[in-house]
Length: 438
Image (tube, rainbow, N blue to C red; front, top):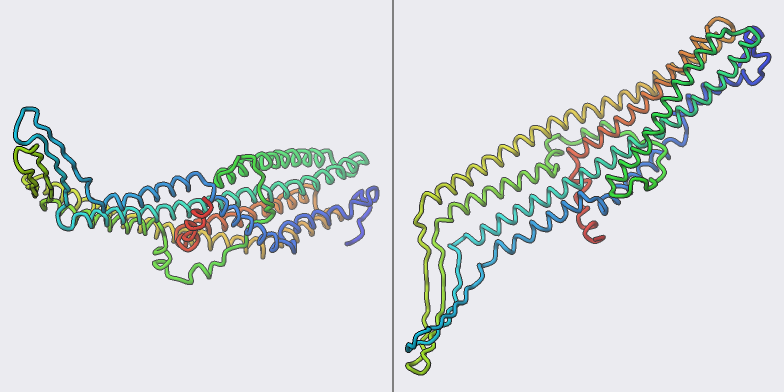
């Protein structure tokens, strides 16, 4: 670094020469540290562990798991026969027959019981896909909440480093003002900048506990529970990998759509069942008559058949189930259109966020650092004002914050893309592990 001319007043402050170098070092360290990749991978592993904890502890997921279990237990109920009926009769007046015993069993019309089981089975399949969708939602929420929490921590570190630098610059400006080589305006500008930065720092510091509570809430833990060490945002997604399959293939794994397909199948089985409801049910019975010795006891076999007389009711039932099927198909189409559009938007947002990150890392931040270095040299030679130096430092800080936000946006949008297109692959095997832990 060049020697500092005496006209700048740094002859009284030997540390001043290294002060501006420290500004560049602190600014560049935020985004060029060699350990950043290792920290990003460590944060990714910590987030995956939080996802596994959420699978085991999330109240929303436990509720979805219980709904799936409830739907599964309806299958044997739908497939079973009605309970048999036992009748006992006693003749109060003296007659040859004193008492009777009767046992009856009703059998639904042909095909009804099997279709009822299929309807319940498809409902259970829809509940299972709904459970997987809930797991995918939990995963997305954990990733997004963790990324926002990491952003707050990184912003706090960035603000603290810049505030330390600003306080040193303020001390330099005050000493130069005392010897008449700086104006009071420079000191006042630095005081205003420092106070503004302190307010921003306080805002980020107060945001951090709230974001930590949000992560813990998604995981299903107490709000003040400490989180694993996460010092860096997860690695950036690879946009080229997101286009390795067609969008239709990716959307097919979406559990919401699979649940919609199961509801369509359920509606189809329900419509078939409605068409068979007008078939007669049969009841088979056996009656024993105790004649008390007056005559030989008697046994009578019985068969009864229901008469589907009220045809209007069955016609209305068929129309109802047909309408349910049309509604399920329309709901599926609407969901598909929405998910397809959301996926396309999420893919665009991921690629746009990655482009912005690369723009900052490859162009804007290096140029801002170079600008700060040039302005610092010009300031020491008297060719730039203190306001120019302060503006260059503030511009670099703003760019670093925007770079952090762009990286966070990339993680948030990638989590949204994963939820829409890869949820089945990411959370499909969680049911077994969660069931074992319970």
